[in-house]
Image (cartoon, rainbow, N blue to C red):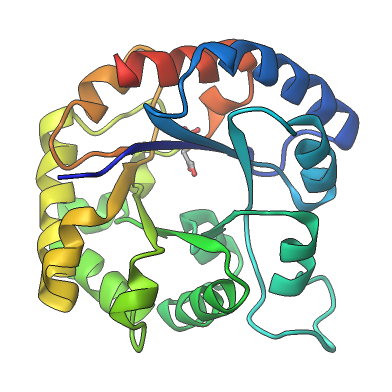
Length: 254
Ligand code: 13P
């Protein structure tokens, strides 16, 4: 098994460009002791801070991603950002289908699929988010929900393209709530996700990086990432400070 730990910070709607410059300078220093051989690390700032993050993190071990992408190449889509715009800046990853976008901005499995195709077209690596709500978990629907999200997201995506995909499993009830899935619960769900992926892409599923997201912190990152099917994390709150993001990554890689 050749999966490398991948931990990305999703800054959500936080950090102006000036704040981004300060955080990136601190991150660059802190992460000098994290060998890129042990983990891939990325930060995903808001669009307005991406150019600053890329400039500040040049020469560091930290890559930069975006939080969304539109499916069209260009055109009359007020407020949207295209793959060409992201690629030109030097962005490497793009988060797609975060639960906050599904919940507040009408994202569906179909639009997630279109955004994935756009990211692939522009050679950006999609971090595809899936996850169930508390109501769905309590109603014993977690597996059905995840299977539907996965099949919808990857409809028409070739095996060759699937190799570039990262998945982030984020139980909605664990995001920003301080409630983390227990390592056992998260592992069982990750193993299920990998099984569904194997049904679609066979042995390639063994190579797919599946991140966990939802209240991951320095205190619990080791135990979570130690699980056989948990390959890293997508981090919200704990990624907004250099110390906590660094300690979370260091603890995760042991
Ligand atoms: P928190 O780490 O703040 O729970 O957020 C997780 C998340 O939504 C990352 O995308």
